[in-house]
Length: 88
Image (tube, rainbow, N blue to C red; front, side, top):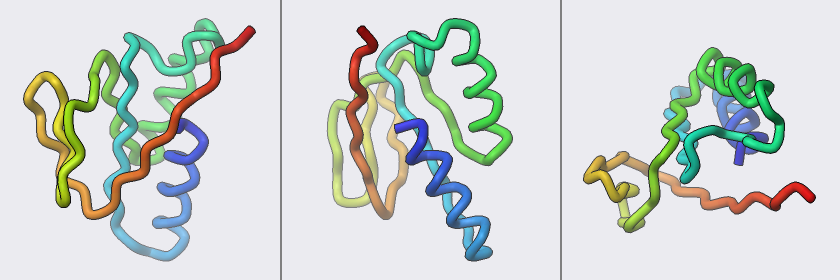
């Protein structure tokens, strides 16, 4: 998800298009297996224009939005769902 969020944001910028990219992470941190580097990656994502929401769970995907369990509704024209792999 992190790599895709970077790529979508970069692609939109290169095409001179406006795209709001939101990364939703269930856990309290992105890339927890990367230790403190996860914080750096979060800052880089934010600098690239990606909104990072941690500690959230998707409760529904609608035609025009993603609904989170905290009641927040994230408007979306396109929704891409990814799943990470656990580090071993």
